[in-house]
Amino acid sequence: MAIYKRKDIWWIRFTAPDGRRIQKSAGTKIKQDAQELHDRLKAESWRIKNIGAKPRYAWQQAVIRWINEQQHKKSLETDKIHLRWLNPYLGSRQLDEINKVLIDRIRQEKRSQTSNSTANRVTALIHAILTRAKNEWEWIDNVPVIKALPEPNGRVRWLTPDEVQRLLNELPPHLNAMARFALATGLREHNVTHLEWSQIDMQRRCAWIHAHQAKAGKAIPVPLNADALAVIREQIGKHDTRVFTYKGNVVNDANTKAWRFALERAGIKDFRWHDLRHTWASWHLQNGTPLHILKELGGWSDLKMVARYAHLSSEHLDAYAGNTSLLKSMTGDKLATQLKTA
Image 1 (tube, one colour):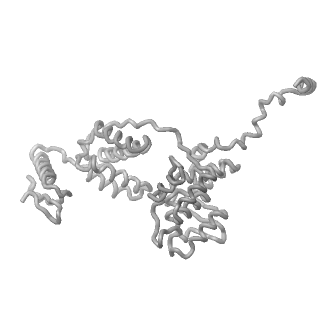
Image 2 (cartoon, rainbow, N blue to C red):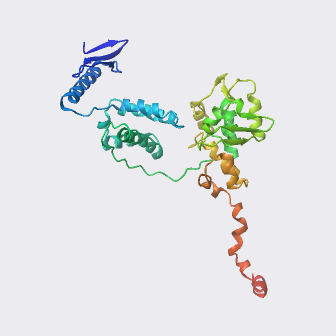
């Protein structure tokens, strides 16, 4: 049979014109879809053998190869999330069928669900895979030009202490602990959820993030203040390896339904888990921490990333604010006369 069923999944089997036996899963429970895939693959084999056509490759083949080659990439898990979302749109497509019109439609659909920035990240991933398929794998000849949607300047969303207290009151205990630790250290979500006891020295009052765990690829020393130490002490004895757990199990994600429901109950809108880091940085600047010190505390690679918080504090400018003062420009009798007539 050209197609047959195995454990509710249809499989394809045929002999190619060059004598090779092709046998593979169609990846579907629908007979019609399996038959269409069979006919397409068989026709493609004929084209390659008889007219020397270039082999065609499917999006799914490119996805598998991309994931295998990107194991070193820190954002690979984010790529996988985007790729799962893209599957209904591209899962049955050949690479040479993915054109500008299709990508624009995908981008607009993503934009209707989220922000311009996220929509751009998704289309940038499509473009990166197609570019590699063209330049390195030589699977396709052309890559469509993709124009990015406009994005707002760096977003800084932070909470006041009163808002934070409202949020903490609504969070379940395990998220409450992680949120308090994030506010005390400024660590990113993954660095908090995956923190291990081997990364903490209570006597020296410090923790550290290894280079391979840091976004900038550079190890981060983390001083632990009284708030952070208090949170750490609460976790002692709950797990042998991980610091933060939920009912004895490790936690890999803090941005959960429980987090979102707590935000709703606290009346806090447009706030992400990563904004706890923005809140930590904003509080530092408002309380006088210099930009260059904040850069080191937060593990940023350069001051450009820290400069977006600079408007929240003007203490470093106070010494110069009087340089254009009218009083400073007047001396002697002129100043005295002006003061008498005031």
